[in-house]
Amino acid sequence: MVKPEIMNPEYCTSQNLRKAARTAARHYDQALQPVGLKTTQFTLLAKIQGAGEIAQNDLANNVGLDKTTMSRNLRLLEKDALVRISEADDRRIRLLSLSRKGERLLEKAKPLWRTAQSSFVDELGVDVWQTLTAILQTIEPVENR
Image 1 (cartoon, helix red, strand yellow):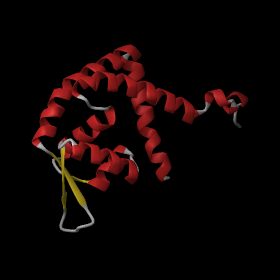
Image 2 (tube, rainbow, N blue to C red):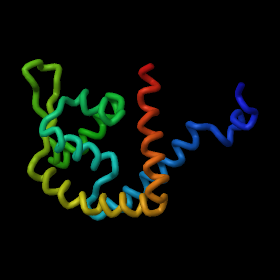
Image 3 (cartoon, rainbow, N blue to C red):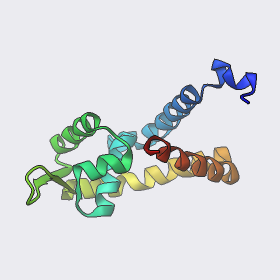
């Protein structure tokens, strides 16, 4: 049986996750400001770098972005010459890789991100951060059930 306090809108999971996500995004965005990146852009560049080359749809699925949001983010990265987009043998598939400019910018951004990550973990405490991370990682599969 659901406890009455759980039904209070103040405890709305969606609202609390969104509020926490906005708070975290502001923290990381502020840290990345000296290199002109937003957190989402940093994440995309880091994921592309880690893969070497990745299909646009695979990247979107990996970071949890819908096709429209992914396309919008990639247009900005491509406009700034940070990402190269090419066609695979199957012309419906767009392959992404970092340009040299993208590699250089990401390397400048990584220490800023590490500082933001470290201060965020310090603020929460390692145990709380580990618990939070574990909980958040369980949420994604729910939509696929």
